[in-house]
Length: 430
Image 1 (tube, rainbow, N blue to C red):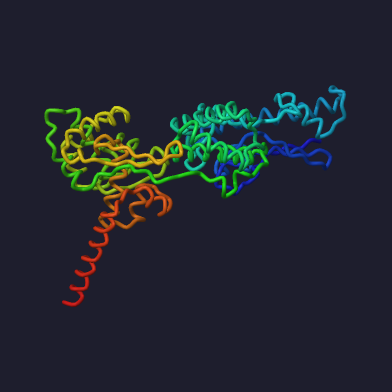
Image 2: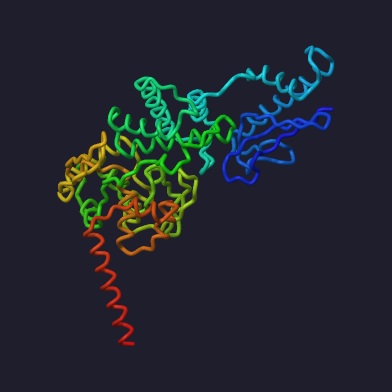
């Protein structure tokens, strides 16, 4: 009698893990890869099926697939048992029967590009989930996947190189980063993003049994990164923006007011653009962040309170992110303090370059979040408290995110000295 059950390869993992079908016949056992994965939290080990819920919408589709796979195995067993296939009853022949039905040739090999393409397709249709959030992959990330695939194909053609799992070596890394740098003329951070995605693909393929090459795990297969020169707005600049008279420009006024909400909450535009009155009560803003699915609670700053009162308990109506960025530049050009020159340094095409801009030209919706984090740090708010709102997981990542110049560090140290002197004086007087 054939025994069939399903289990997770790593039932205690905190990420997606492969689902394995185990076949037992006359005391012999065989593992069969289903080609599917799920999170342990979404798996019912008693039922040997995925749990179905509003959070995990893929569960129903996954269970249908597993049920079909179960029926294929049973049908193969019965056909072999009755000699219909002209072969002896064995686990290997059951496997061959299932492979044929699933169009999995015994000799069939999943190559790097076909695996990458399938990953993109699964992301686009919402089947593949973000390992950290359990939510579908965001559109911007999918676009980056597509761009990475395009660059890899173009490199393969230009270098006349075959690219498969075993070709992703340290030598490939050196040649490919040089190509992205000198031929594609990409910036250092963009190159780093594409390398990061290659490592992700290699890891996923390894987990699913399609890749056994570990060259990408070498310390020399590094994700290139350099500190960006993104701007932030200090408290004086924010004060001037808030007090600037925009009564003749109602659309710009709404954009300005919503932007200030971001500057004093630290939320991403995807979050502060959808804030509703029900998210605000008892002096606190409570919202589940769109990108991470993490809840966050933020006190209502005086500026935010004034804006809410100004709009009768509501927040200004939001526009698209792209349109808001356009209007922010129109607004910034009108603000005198934002006409100062900013020098932006970056590496592109392997060469260090500088561009000069007036500060308003670099304004985006994300400037609000960066301004919040930097200003709160300069004001002495504990780093861990700020990170609880911004969502940074490590202090190292947070300190890389905020934007401080040498004079900011000097002022910060001077403020600490003054605070220490005041504390010592109070102690002495007591």
